Image 1 (spheres, rainbow, N blue to C red):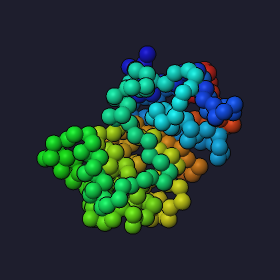
Image 2: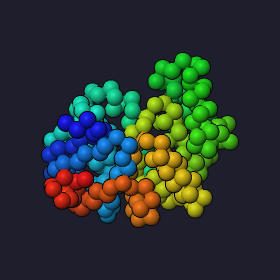
Image 3: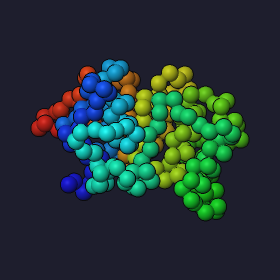
Image 4: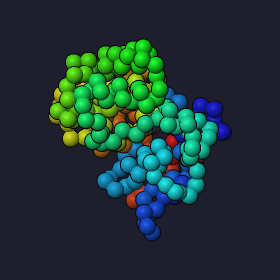
Length: 222
């Protein structure tokens, strides 16, 4: 077992009815690494991200997080989050969204407020705190969703097409946010069609085709 590994996948196979939707012989994601999943629509990228965050199952093979199986792994829920291509924010203001996530994690009032203010400043959303979440642009919504997760303690982010369908301003803001997370040591695993985003952010690329993660030299997808 690699002490530096955040995720380890071995012999994975997941099916929708009889069709293999995702398979991976071997994958290791190390602490602080940024890994891009690339490939055509329907190739298994999103399915793989959801499997790694425990949102889909059952499956054959194994997925571990911090050296333990993901099933009933409290560290997975505490430290990792899956951010949808179109994140869902709760009704209410941006502040309400961050505060609710912090209450779920049982932070005390003073620490919760400090975390909320720090995340708002770090991700450039302080000016949005009193805005209704339903009135945000795509880029703003993505930044709020990530800020909410990080404020609540996540440092392993699984992101599905994080810059998809955004205007140029939103795209630039999200790229800057992700670059900052990478510099700060967060672990990023993201799917993307945008080759420039992959070049900017990825330490390593895993290609998917017809549900299968393509193995590189040595037989591992790394």
